[in-house]
Image (tube, rainbow, N blue to C red):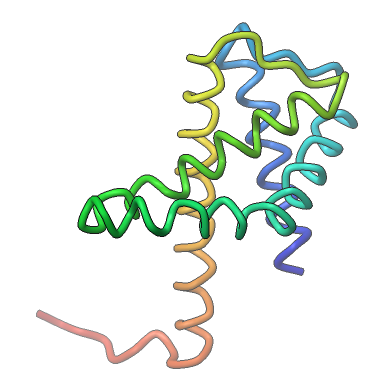
Length: 131
């Protein structure tokens, strides 16, 4: 269920990116679904490799780079998705980095909402505070 919800969220995000940035081109809604699937598959198979490659530089920057690792991973995977699919194209670096930033924010909000929902299911809503 989580995976389908995440793919739907990523599909809507890709469609929104094509509206926000004029240099992000997508042919159809079906192409957006394929982009979301390819991006997710690349994230599963290559995302960890990029994170491992960034581990040493993150340590050398005293952990500051850890704040930007999700953004960097999303930018690389979005670039790879662009190169793999003919129905999806990002023409400028600005659109690539802007799209990666938006996907990073949407993924963070999705993870936060999912985590909050899981904690609410496990622990309940908590006591009512009247103050």
